[in-house]
Image 1 (cartoon, helix red, strand yellow):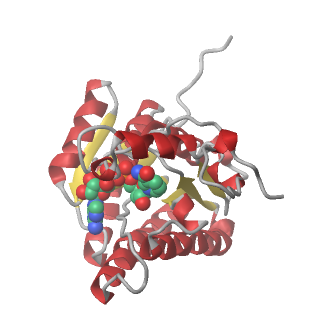
Image 2: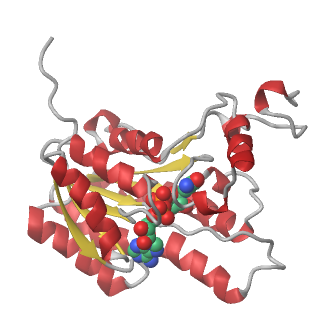
Length: 272
Ligand SMILES: NC(=O)c1ccc[n+]([C@@H]2O[C@H](COP(=O)([O-])OP(=O)(O)OC[C@H]3O[C@@H](n4cnc5c(N)ncnc54)[C@H](O)[C@@H]3O)[C@@H](O)[C@H]2O)c1
């Protein structure tokens, strides 16, 4: 068998929210490590520098190439700065993973206007800001891949209306960007993670809830940041050269089900 070349050899990537908000492996951290394992040089962006440093240390220990850029992706000048840093350090830009996202539970009667605006700014506006600086750089070198991290919460109700509204907007943004920039050979896709267990959700989880989340899907197993990371590697790679404008749920099948009882998925009756 011929020796396999790393799937992202020669490519330069930016990952936003490349740290983890707590101990363990979040989506941004796993995505960054896996992109680097496949040969990409990765600019690790996070509002909290030490979090990105931790991801960077893992990548360097494994022999990969990465560096840190501290930035708040809701600020246009900082988004301009992070794209410029990637190009200055590594010479080009091929992959942008818009991973930053915060969650906010509650109905529209419960959420304050400030909270609503914050969720929209962090989860949606940030993707527009980073992308509009990244796209001209990608155009310069013949194209690229933008991956927006949405959520299954953007595809169905989730007891967190501001979050659902923001993630549904990410899906719409992805469709529209894919249509707008396809002729520049820029592919734009989104991943919709399901009920993965990451440091983002761990603080509000007890064993019982964790088990319920696992049981809710047809596969009945727990997802991790690595599952999201492997999907990102595929969408970033040339193997996905004909794939744009898709929403890829990585959710153990959760979104294909229509539960009509509160039983675990394996024991439920299904509507047709
Ligand atoms: N964990 C889940 O169950 C789950 C499910 C569906 C979708 N998601 C999505 O996955 C993405 C993130 O996952 P994660 O596991 O990497 O989260 P995380 O909270 O562990 O890490 C996100 C990182 O983003 C950084 N950050 C937050 N706001 C920022 C800003 N304004 N500018 C720059 N950096 C900022 C934080 O410092 C943190 O290090 C989010 O978009 C989230 O909505 C998660």
